[in-house]
Length: 271
Image (tube, rainbow, N blue to C red; front, side, top):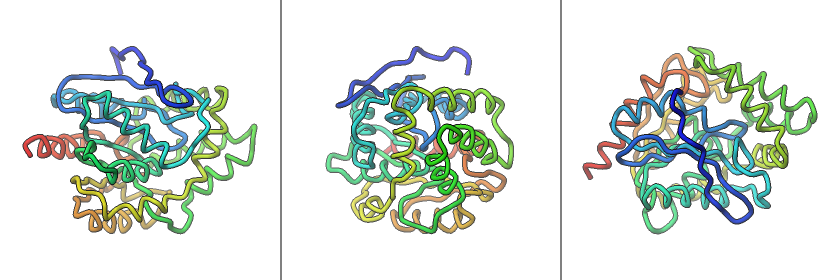
């Protein structure tokens, strides 16, 4: 997106997290899924900023512009990172996360202190389920070095069956370049093998409001609509199913997902 802000870095034990800040207003911290980078959120970020919100978009540890020097790559460490990012945003924020990162977001919301004002969970994986196609591809890519980067980049393109974003080719180039950075392949392999099991056990401790978003044509999980319904029921949240979207509804149809997120955040602000 034009006028991209300067990348900032948050110092964490073991390395730095890359993030940027756009807009002013109620904060929303956005973290992408495994194998992705924060520019994934460019389309929806622009919409949310135009709706009067402050968007903090960050790369996962060992991804994008973040360092690959971390020792731990697990859900609890990611949850710690997310809470640290929320602290930089003012100490309380909506947390938006995709895929396995959504499981770490659940753990962050289950922590004491209520620093997570609300959760937006995109194509979430928060309980052990039969392995999906994306998971198998992640796993295969992790084994097939040096061809793994190409395998994941090719499969990543296929996860947009509806209307791929205009910057998809640029996004794929960014992903491939990021995976080639020191330590990033190791991070990708470790995070691609994570089980979301701990998040399922933590759902009963989540007290904030939750919005669950899924694509009806998600290749990763053919039962994603049912999974999203189950998750929304567990946390007494709201489910949004985007009819033509695949694994990344927020990037394919930001004009649908963005207003839903903005309404969700606005309701939280009104208490």
